[in-house]
Length: 165
Image 1: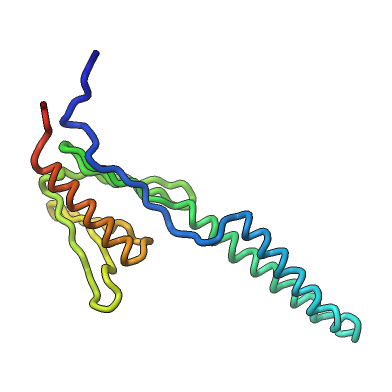
Image 2: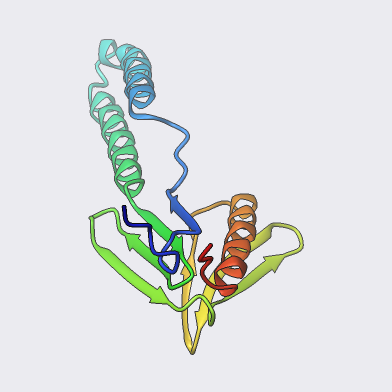
């Protein structure tokens, strides 16, 4: 039986995704409630003969649906971050499915943090030999700080080298 190469053993791996508080099922429920409320709000105008109001109210429902559709499409983006003694890798996948990858030597990687006293960690960048890359851009400041801490620990462990025993 072959043992896994400790030099390429994963120390840390994370998939970062944008937070969405509303799942598709609850969105359908929200859309139905919104459409029904718009219908009942529009009904008196139809009875009074102000039928153009119904078109504009229907346009509101359409815009509401389009905005959430765009929001759910944007939620398909994610970032994969992994650390091993041999490599620090970041893969960013856009909402359209376009993938970009960066690979760094963990010995040379430095995390650069831009913090605000009031809001916390605003930006987290990876810097290595003149190259820099912003990561975890869609996380909130608290989650970004937790992620930065865990990533720092993983990079420190990777700098110690592979464990052969």
